[in-house]
Length: 70
View 1 (tube, one colour):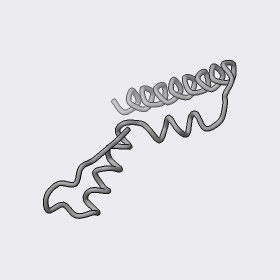
View 2: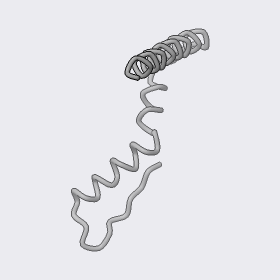
View 3: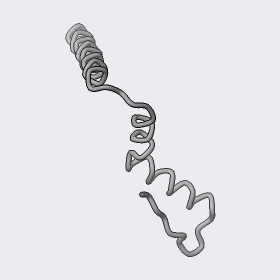
């Protein structure tokens, strides 16, 4: 759980900004979004496979465009 303590002479806005940054870095919100609905193991595997294919295609595009620029 992310906690922040009010520093001396710190405004509420700065405190809130620090809290939001801490929550984002900890990955709490992404975990909550992921666990919001039940996803079966087979569905997780299918999603991961799609992600990996997308990642590989993106890498191939970058290497092809980099090679053409030489």
